[in-house]
Image 1 (cartoon, rainbow, N blue to C red):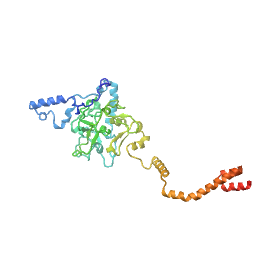
Image 2: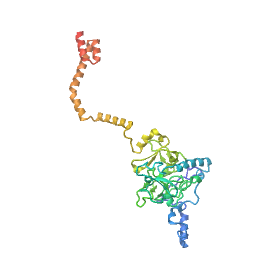
Image 3: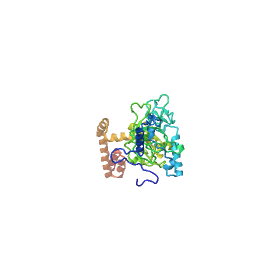
Length: 373
């Protein structure tokens, strides 16, 4: 596409015909299937592919490397690999980046995949209970190789090029041709959970121990072509959740960098990430406000309450206050008028009386007037 960097492919939109554009390897797959059917060969019976590995058959024969993704720049490849290593090696939930099992509730737990050893919170991955016996994440269950950063490989996620991680199945599959040549069948739950136009279905019947299903069919080119401020690679980046901050990054890059995260109190529990600046301790209260939560009892809340009460009393005085002012209007008004009259007389009488009136002493002013007379 015009404006694309040398050696890189921009995400291509679907065709204008209304349907999803077939992927590059669809013709070869259908042709192969037709030849097998015509020759009476059953692919499943021959051992070439079993039903469990059907989704994995869409993976490219040769996986793209990090070096090829960055155009052969060895220094850039090493930098990107270091950032991605940090995300994979973190001893925490792969979706939210929190290490405590009760981060999102006392009844939450962290479970480990027996295939790839990835760890996730039950609530983050969409599990309703702790699986009994051996448990495989969706990627391992489907036989999908998520990519190995130690081997310099890119990932399988349709939203970002990071290897490894907790994958969920895409329904429908992705129609985007991206720079890292994903098969488009799976995506990181961590990526999907941060994007408002991506739906993470965690209540699908029959999937209580299998995890969520992701729908990214509403993702547009401006999102998929964003560039991460950390690894400098394209992908569906999220934005710092602090108001008026426009820093963009892959959720897993933010996880590897140790950025702060919160889960929104509403919005179906959407995960929010904050940039390096807004991950500081002094921004803790603002992060919770961005997530729809407040901190009751702190100085800021008390100050806001006092301010709101003061404004309310000015605009809408209470009934008791109004009656009290009405009862005092006679005495208070008479005293004020007496002081004002004495002050006028004192000014006319001389400086001694004026000084007394200035102090608000009506009796002293009257005495001074009589003395002067």
